[in-house]
Amino acid sequence: MKRFLRRTDLRPDAQRDVSDELRFHLEMRTQEFIDAGMSPDDARRAAARAFGDVSSIDAELRAGRGARTRTRDRRDWFHALGQDLTFALRTLRKNLAFTVASPTSVNEVFVSDARSFAPRKLTNVNEQTKAFTLGTREVISWQSKDGTTIEGVLIKPADFDPVMTRNPCV
Figure 1 (cartoon, rainbow, N blue to C red):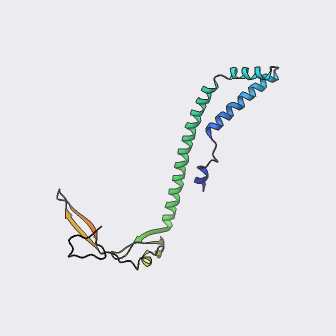
Figure 2: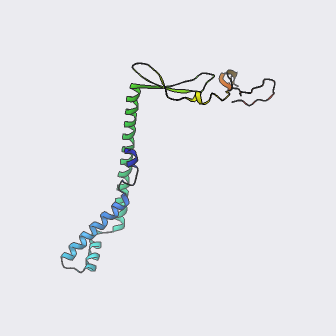
Figure 3: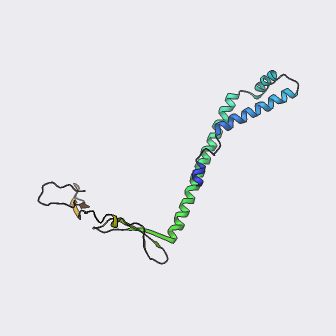
């Protein structure tokens, strides 16, 4: 939830903040000149002259604010990563998750308390695939061009016919 809120529009907009800050300072300086007895138009011109080149100040502030924002985003990302890793390691210390499979079935996911190993089945894929006819699996090996023996698993289709010259295989 924190990560969601961190990435939404609730975070301040750096460009809008810079513009608002500059506008505020110009208005305050203008008000000072008006309080000193200048007309509003003369006070605005005098404030702009006293303040300096607003566009260069604006660009400089935006660049600085953008760099700080990127640094803060990077720091927040690493902090969240650290929290996620801490949570994962703490959870793994208490619970184990693993898969169990055989050549004739689909993988199932189990979870168990790490202290007293008593696996509890989380998925039930094999019940859902009972009606399916699964192909047979066979471990095969072959020689590569450089003479290295390579092993793989050949999955033959359920309706495999060894007499046929071509059968689809995975």
